[in-house]
Image 1 (cartoon, rainbow, N blue to C red):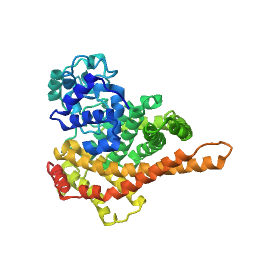
Image 2: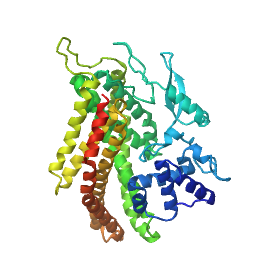
Image 3: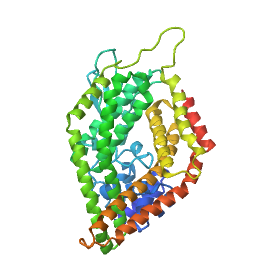
Image 4: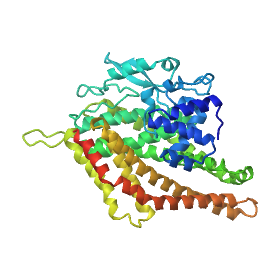
Length: 478
């Protein structure tokens, strides 16, 4: 996939011996890739998913040694520098790099800005020459001074949301309505931030990030929706549904094409050419889906949705149900509601243990959706949970990714089968060789089988007492 210079190899070997497990695994992925190891073998060696391995391979192709924190690059042998490796973004700081292996894109840098309140708050900005020159000491100092951004101040007065907030700013005494507004503001700003990149279509990750933001917005409404009147949030929910439907098909085809491309790179030139008709047909589908997506983003309905969302975010109390006063209060603060909310969501996931033996693919698909809702619920509320919540989220994500890969393989197999049927109807006029396409379809069938066979072990790990203990510790902070 790529070749390493002798200097890069030397530095990567140094990095594998660092005390940070995540960074060491990242270096191992690059070294094993250069040694022509298959992604599946690399994933088994470094104890990560194949999806994560492939993403780090892609990141290295684009950014080279900039996928590592700058303090490690400083150890580089003469001849290796962050300027020489073709990366366009400023290197991440140590704290930004020491993250879970699923966080792939380099995070923007920190910068202080003034907002209307005249208080200095820190926000994330896109990497610039100024941001690239921020040294680690400055970052550490600014991080310690970081304060949550308070979105809403006085009732019925509009406040300006701060784009790219560092954190949501939840407090355990927030009402469900106020907390929901903060979470919705956070993810709405992320959605809007990635809209221009999604329109441009030059980087598929922009669409991915925008789609994730819409999903997390819908999750936020599931978590906090009961705190608002249905009339107030109905247009927001409808706008999110329409936007998700517009983004989804394009993103799904991006993932499909990307996986197919990785597979093609393992084939001979002749075999790659025999897959080209499938690639061409997928690009035709993607172009059609993208036109529909752009049409939606240019539509009056989408503009109305964003306007309604801005109004909802900026107006404290808008749409919130009244809180009954008196000597018999109902739970309405996060610290009172969240424990039950999390356990109710977890119970819906765990209930599947009664039907998993020989479960059909449709049941596993529903479990994937339910586990994703648990993950998004935990992520919405992570700021007020204990530190164990991060590990809980990662374990939920692992089971979700396993089921997600299964779903992707099933969908891909169905699409390939339909395209094969179309091609076979056109024979012999087209004179296409379909054997390689049929082979890829079989690979998708085998992948489904392997994921289904290995799922019980993945579920057993997830559904163990240690996980339940960590979940309990996460909630105990409230």
